[in-house]
Image 1 (spheres, rainbow, N blue to C red):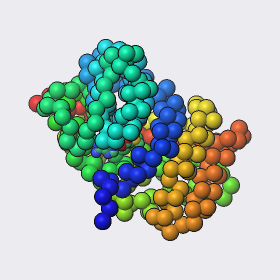
Image 2: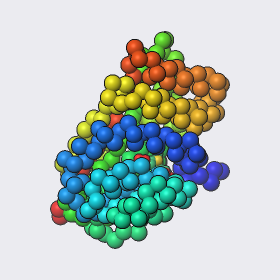
Image 3: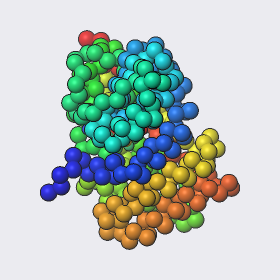
Length: 274
Ligand SMILES: C[S@@+](CC[C@H](N)C(=O)[O-])C[C@H]1O[C@@H](n2cnc3c(N)ncnc32)[C@H](O)[C@@H]1O
């Protein structure tokens, strides 16, 4: 019997995840920020960031909207310590990091204007429980924002198709661990089923034209180092095979004549007013 809370817990708490989250924020935040402005982040007074990790998102949001009181919550103290060091309260008086479980938080009912959940739900078997908790703590009319991953949205100009099949092979390998690498396409339905209103999904397309190739390549290197052994072991592949496929994706991104992209789904919905 595993004593993990969820199948990807080791990878989520591995030191490589720190680099992954930094690279992802560098790529995604510039595309995401205007969307969040449109969703009302600039006018709200409180934000709970569930599964905040190393605080890459909460920290950027705190700097962008100094009047927004932000609390990042995560179950892993190691990431929270890094978050508090990177975004100290002296520089960000509107930002706090607390340890907790996104499935059962400390907030009282109807007390928060905004809840964000980024890069988390695909890895959890209990998505409905987290969405129900988000709805409970949101004030009537408050907004939930979910950045959802779907690994079919990773497309690279690689020779042959072995590298391009990597995430399909990984999906089959990781499903028994409670991970859904194709979660992004389900997020609209999940928010509706959880009882949110005005649910919408905005695409965020990170690609080799709108982001720095070096940052994109760095993320793929961290993914390889953090996940190749797990995927290989889970799916019965040779580790060298999976590493080579991650490397082929990275090489496509590093080559200025080749294209690569990552399509993410930015979903949002409002808690009904009554
Ligand atoms: C991939 S990281 C995302 C970090 C952050 N949201 C970001 O966008 O940079 C996923 C995080 O979710 C956290 N996590 C997983 N399950 C959780 C739960 N039930 N409650 C709180 N945090 C959880 C992990 O510890 C990890 O830090």
